[in-house]
Image (cartoon, rainbow, N blue to C red; front, top):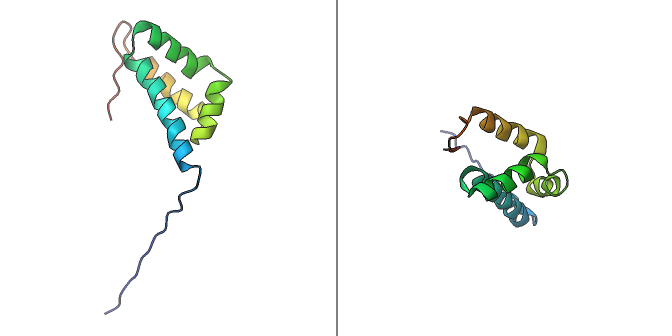
Length: 90
């Protein structure tokens, strides 16, 4: 009988906590866009879709591709029925 040994090692870089923090910032903006007050929804939408300075930096720090994220969010926006609340489920 042979034995197979497997081992995996995950290197947690020093930047991982910061990356998670920036991802939380993006998640919060998406949450505000989906279910915040009307004013917060508008602010979040502007930030998520039109901000080409701060949002780019935040996405970079989060290790996320801004173009891909905006494309996926635009797809969600296009699927929403006008006048309804956009609900995202996992």
